[in-house]
Length: 344
Image (cartoon, rainbow, N blue to C red; front, side, top):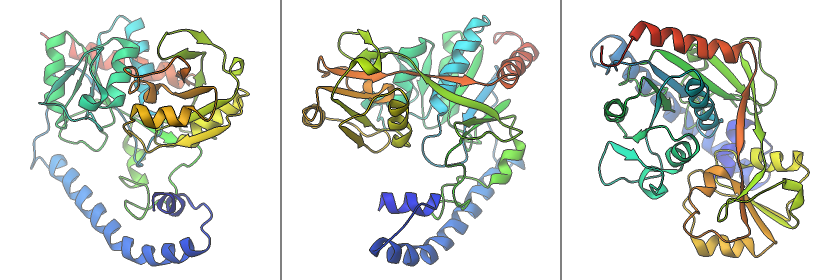
C-alpha cells in the first residue's frame, strides 16, 4: 500500500491490480484531503488572528521545514546551519519533535549517548555530529525553554514549519528537487502538508538535487569517506567489495543513487521505512548477503550498540549554492543582533 500511495503522489507508473486500487482510492481520499486542508488552515488562522497565543523565544528561531511529507534533506541543512553559525561565533541549539522516540518525559535533553528509541534518530545524529545542545518535545516551546538553560543564542528547529504554536523569525523550506510536489494535492491524496502557495511566504527555498528554480538555492549532498560504525575507521566507498546497501530514510532511492554515483554497485539495495527501528538479528541476516553492510548516518545512530566489524555508514554534507548560502547566514546574524543577548 505504501508503494501505491507513493506512486499516486508522484505520478509514477501504476499497472495491473494496483491501477484498479488507485482508481478506487482517488474518490475516497479526495474528501479526506479537503478536510485535512480545512483543518490545517483553521489551525493556522487561529494563531494569525490571535485566538491562540504562540510562544515567542527571547532568541532568534529558525525553522528548517518542508511542505511535503517524507524526507527532503532537512537534517543535513540543520547540520550545515549549526556548523556555519558556530564558525560565526554564535551558540546555536536545536529542537525537534523527537519523531520515532518515546522519552520518559518532555522536554528531554539529548546527550551524546542518548538512545534513538528515546528521542528518535535525527536528534541523536545532530547531537553526535555537531555537539551542540539538542532538546526534543512534541510542544516545541518546551524544548526551546530547556535549551535556553544551556546558553544558546539561536534556536534551529528540525522540521516544525506547521508548528505554529512557536513563533519564528526565519523560515527555510527544503524541496526535493527530483520529486518536487508530486500531484500537488494535500494529504492523504497527495504529499502536501500545506498548499504550494505557502512557499510564497517563507524566507528561503532550498532545492535538494534536481533543477533549482530561479528563486531557489541549489543544494546537493556531498558524501565523504565511509566510516566503520564499530571502530571509526575510514575508507573510500570503492575500496569495499560485495556491498549490501540499506536505507531507512524518507526516500531511500536517493541514498542508493549516491552510492551508484560513487561507483558502488551493491549486490542488494534494501529500503526500510523512515525512522524504522532495527533489531540486530534483522541486520545480521541482511548483512550475510554480502561482505559489507553500508547504510546512512541516520541509520547508523541506531546500530552503535550491536554493530559488526563490517558495518559502515556514509556521512553526507549539505552544500548550498552562493550567494544564497551567505544570504541565509547574514539574515540570521542580522536578526540575532536585533535580539541582543538572551539575558538582556
